[in-house]
Structure formats: C-alpha cells, structure tokens
Length: 304
Image (cartoon, rainbow, N blue to C red; front, side, top):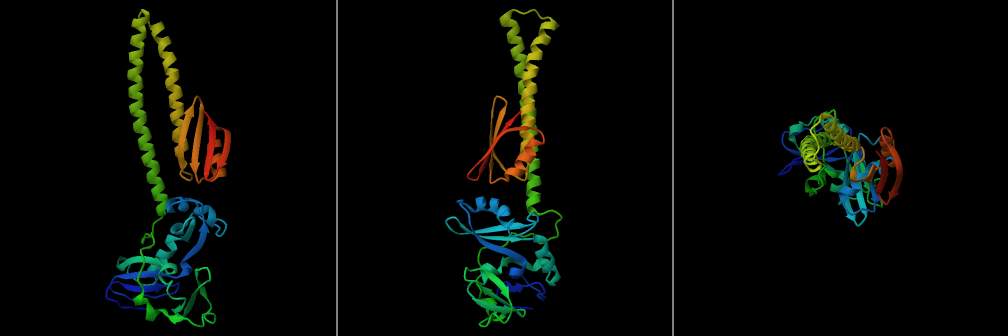
C-alpha cells in the first residue's frame, strides 16, 4: 500500500500489511498490535497511573513483564491506558517492507481514527464500540464502513505518539532505565560511603585526642585500643545500616518512596508497590516487624 500526501505519508499497519514507500511515513497501528482499556484510577497524574498499570493489566493478560505502557488522561481519575509489546510492533513494521529509517512516528489507531465510526482497510473492518474503544470485527458487521484509504490523508494526527524503539533490543526500555537507575544509586552510595568514612575517621581521631587531653589519659596502647574499640563498634553499626539501605534500594521492581531509621528499626514507605513481592525481597535478609497498606502506600518496619 502506498499513500501520498504533502508532508509525511500516513499508512495504516495491520498484521499482514505491505508498505511500499520511498519517503517519510507516519504509521497508524491497527488494534491488533495493542490492548486498550479505560480505567478508573484514584490518582492525580499520568505518572502515578502508569505505576499501577501492570497490576491492572494482570487481570487481562498473562505476562505483563514484556509489556510497555502508555497513558492518556481523559478526566479526573479516568485514564485511557494502552499496553503493547515493542518487539512485536518492531518486527511487523520491518516485515511490512518499510525502511525503518523512513518511519517518522507511530500512532495508535484508537486515537487517530476516532472521527470515523466504521472503516475498512486492507480488507479488514474496524468499528468503535459504544464506550469508544476501536476493535476489529468481521466485515459483515461493519455495514456502513468507509474506505480508510480515501480518508487517511485528511486525518489530523494527534500529539499522542507511541514511545517505541524501532530496533531489535534484547532489553526493553523499562529494563534499560532500571539498570541505569541501579548503577546511579550504587555510585551515589559508594561516593557517600567514601566521603562518610573519611569524615568518621577524622572525627574519631579528633575525639580520641580530645578524650586524652580532657581526661589526662596516658598515651598507652592499652587505653588507646579501648577507646578505638568503642568507636569502631559505632562505625560497624553505621556500616550495617548503610548495607541494609543499599540492599533495599536495589529492589528495582518496587519503588522505595522514603525511609526513616530510629534506633535499629527501619521504616520503609513504598508507592504503588506489590506487597507480596516487597515482603519476600526484604525477608531474604531482614526481619519484618510490621507491614500495612494505607491507600496506595505500603509501610513496612524492618529490624536491623
């Protein structure tokens, strides 16, 4: 299928489409390539809504780990939510025959064809359901379908481009971002440890010298070792706290919102977390004193 326009060409991609173009194209994806639902989510922002999507789509799909998600806010607490497999779309675009370097942008037909109630393209029919979801149907059902090839050039594309990588990546973009985040956290922790250790050693030397002078202590190795033993115990406990914090931050599946330490009890707060996953992860190394969920926030107390 080859379509001509004054700017980028617009093409509709279904599972068996063949595209013959030699200039830039905007690809509109058939519903065959994604899942779409309208969810009522009691959060204020798209970012917050995106965090809970894997849990919501678990009721519809078996494996959500390989999915990417996109969210459009319709109104207060109501979101149009998309789930798709980046690799599947990449492979079908490549299979269609279009040069990937010519792809300008990729869009969901759900958003771009909403001005056409029924249409047929590539001998396949699509209609919008009463709740506004675009679905593929048998041709006999779409009795008033228009030919999309005749209308596609007049479609004004929205700003809702799909966040998709047009290359065959072994890792998903979400996994790449998670790995980068973990490396940044580890680097920050190591830098903090180095700076903190140097500061503690300096303070320790100053305290020893001050104790000697104020208490008029003799400079014997026995007394010096006694003082060092006391402060080394404090340093050891501080190292234990940092080790615990470093371990807890390494859980890339659930985002740690904040933490507080009082005596030897560490209070953790997670936003939109999977309670069972978090508890299993923490229990591998530490004892959980208590665990409760307040709204979308998970609160856990851990004994060091």
